Amino acid sequence: MELPRNPTRSVRIGSITIGEGRPIAVQSMTATHTQDVDATVEQANALHAAGAGLVRIAVDSQKDAVALAEIRRRTTANLSVDLQENYRLAAVVAPHVDEVRYNPGHLYHHEREKPWQEKVKFLAGVAGEHDCAMRVGVNCGSVDPAQLEKYGEHDSIGPMLASAWEHCELLDQLGFTRYNVSLKDSDPQKVIEVNKRFAAQRPDVPLHLGVTEAGLPPDGIIKTRIAFEQLISRGIGDTIRVSLTVPNARKPEEIAAGRQILADIAAGRVRSFVDFGLDTLNIISCPSCSRVENEAFIELAQQVKEMTAYAKDYAITIAVMGCRVNGPGETDDADLGLWCGPNHVNLKKGSLELGSFAYHEILPRLRAELDQLIAQREPVKT
Ligand code: SF4
Image 1: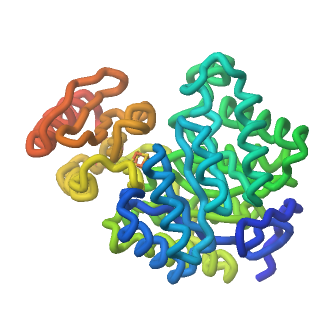
Image 2: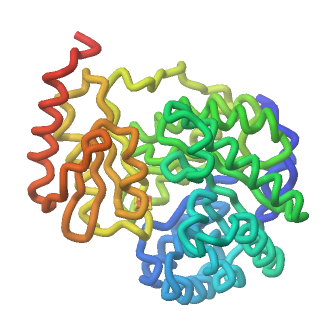
């Protein structure tokens, strides 16, 4: 079946090119500690061997940047660097990677007095000098605070779009057009809406699609499939990632899942539409990355899923995140949110922080909070 494709620009990222009708590239991200060079090289190579067109690696410090240079020497995978708050690290890592990914919502933490436009100009200059593409990665859990202020608290999509559009406009003005954009949320319906609206206004900009914190397989694959079917069948999307909470050795499953979804859509094997409008228990968990603070996170995510199964008929969302960097923000929309620290797990009920608990204490405490929520609500199914 011939699928329509939006008339996106071509963007070369290392040895692959996305956009302009090219095959949709499948990518992933390493979850090992970046400074553990042997483990990260092994995982990058495993993802590459599974068919990853691009492998993203998080870099948060100078030590990570040094490790990345060594990783580059030991893998032929196309590499993307995932920058968080310290945008200036781009200058150190750009010589070793094929793409620089920055999050507009994270450009505010360092050098607060400097306008974000100057920071983007710096990033574009570095990327251009070192033959790198860029990704503007907008994430529901860390949207530019200046955009959030302009929209009501019930509009999560407006600020994401405004942020993406203004960054595209600036990059275009700077003459840097070798970029792609991602707009991610943990709710597949929001992923569909935000990407449709972005593409309607900027059909020329290649899009990287993903449902963030999709969770454990098979649910995480199903949520992602729902979003991808709706978007790719309309010609939207040039590269994808299926984010799954799986142990490191199983990370290549993200690539296999992505390829399977693409093959099914191309063959017309689309599933009936499933509404994830939170009318049943919804567990979201981050796919893990090098920022995970305790290896027990993957097991904890699994245990949360098993322990909470008894609440399956209640419209309750529980979020489980691997670190303190993104965990607090990305649990904002959940009824109960957990994020991992090195020795403790933090727990939140709505916006109320309930404290931090040892790993062996967290499940009983979570259950007590869940029981309270259930007592206040009617089941949606009988
Ligand atoms: S929540 Fe933290 S550990 Fe999980 S993927 Fe995001 S940055 Fe990585």
